[in-house]
Image (cartoon, rainbow, N blue to C red; front, side, top):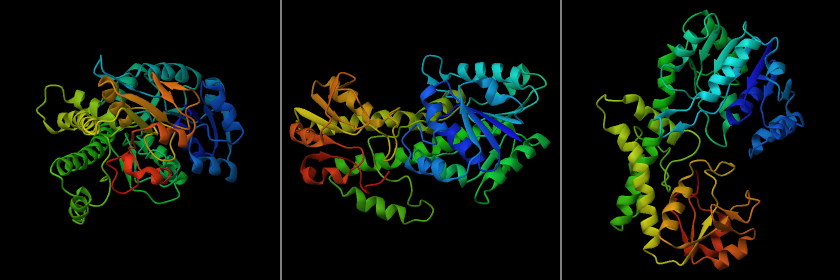
Length: 387
């Protein structure tokens, strides 16, 4: 059995690396530097665990920039193409995914095409009508940023949007690739698409809830950690996704919660719109709280969403930065992953000591031991020094 994977981002590459333990896998990406890195058994993005896995695990894995090479004679073709939310249209932009599906179904019409990209509810059924006679299945991924490999090898559950023999054939492959014994759920394609959106909206709600708890505590001069600790001792609530931050961000939570809200249309709801609105409210509170301290030069420590990641996309730190910049204060940035000396109009400093010296106040979405010597001028809502 040969397997093709289109897209070598977090989802596509970790999936390919997981499947390549048991099958011959060819992953395709338009980025030639990614292709070269994978063929040299290096991770093309910041993920130490994935890098070690690629080097140390016997894998039948190859990378190419040719969809024909990736799809030729493949029994399964997995599509892991980005689908970003478009605020103007009020929906995911699926044009790139649709173009890839048009192309690859012509190359390998006998293959099963498995959509791993997050899509609007009803997308898979629409693609099935558009590509009559082609096997198309939606199977969402549930990956934590910077833990994508772990979640691919030991998934919390396997959800497949097909209840026929087609879905069961895909299920056998994914179960065989897993190192654990995950729950298996086969359901309709639109139900599976909904599962992905509602799961991420709930996680966004968790983050927003504890951020608003922290806002309340800060405004009333209360000990936020004492409150969170005691609240989370209730086993119905649990001790996860409870560490306050500047806001939720990253690849999935912001875009998926907005897409879910758009999906409701005119249906009655209050909670989903509140989750989306709460993130902007939180960033405004954080910016206001920072400005109340009267700094002239604010140092921004790291732009990445999580420790061990190189992702800036939809970072809540960037949202706070925009609000601070609009207020007219000077911002300087310390981000080792940036090679340039300017980012979004702000100075980027390569030396941490220089950054500390020049900053009146340092903002850090997540605390770090690197800032221990200047702790007195660090602003963070991080209670537990973890993501």
